[in-house]
Amino acid sequence: MALDATYVYWTSPGVGSASIVKAAINGGEVTTIASNLDGAAGIAVDNTSPTTTASNVYWTDSSSGTVMRQSLTISGNGTPIATGQQSPAGIAVDSSGVYWVNQAPGGADNNGTVMRLTGGIATTLAFGQLQPTGLVLDDPWVYWVDLGTNGSDGNVARAQMNGGLVTTLATGYNVGTAPVRDSTSLYWAICGAGYDGDGRLLRVPLDGGAVATLVGQAGNVTGTCGIAINSSKLYFTEVWATMSATQNNGSVLSIPVDGGTPTLLLGPPHSPQDDPNAVVADDANLYWANNMGGGSVMELVGKGQ
Image (cartoon, rainbow, N blue to C red):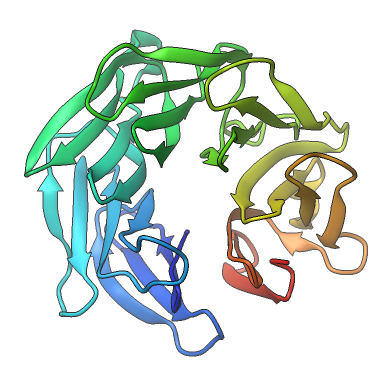
């Protein structure tokens, strides 16, 4: 999901029938931006802050191996800005360029990459990654997480936007969610393919250092599969172990960025969610996607505070 001052954006999956859609943050009609796509994975917009409205939306198409862009001021169905990519996934945009990760099928071959597009030229910033899933920008750095291949060889790393040495900040994790950051730290959560994570929410200083566990492993949680941040809190979605049997068993929670006791915002037993996944937040409201139960995008007013 992506967010600007006016709209929330998301991908609707499906091979040959995927779409990019948006809705006003205060609710209203859903607008399709692009449709009948081969596939849609990561999504980003080019707003410079949550108080500005974006000009373009970007997404990765893992099925066709393309990175796409569509103006939000004219109609169209997306223009490829990079082709020949290997399972592109997470994507991020700032004034310096467009960045994404290539998961590259067969992660055991260590052929995942971290990419940058600027001036129409695609550059590889990092080679030899296992299964990178998401990334976040903090000029002059690009940070990303790597799922790994066996549940314990994933890592968190960074490199400069103009290339150079890759620095590993944390290793030995099953890292599934795209990371988020504030001015001092990087945050990520454990959620693997098939929800085989353990629900931990972790933090590491941007320049490296000791990894802190903000939310510990929970026996009935199989993955923390979405994470967002605003000026004071972290928000995360959890999938419970009984999800496959009941679907309605996910939760949305918050925790101060400095750590503490998580607050349940929505979840069992009174307001269970259907496989909550991606989540975004501003300083007023919270938005997330439920993957099951027909699929839905939800807003919780006043809980971004």
